[in-house]
Length: 40
Image (cartoon, one colour):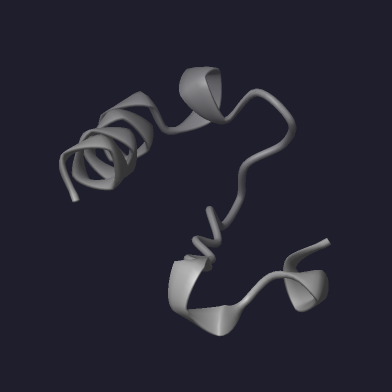
């Protein structure tokens, strides 16, 4: 999906050692990335 989008609107974040439950596995980083995405 990302490859089909214009590169100027794509931001890829990898959460190492996390499963599908990123909020559960890395809540602080998840919410920091989410806040930055919303405010940018």
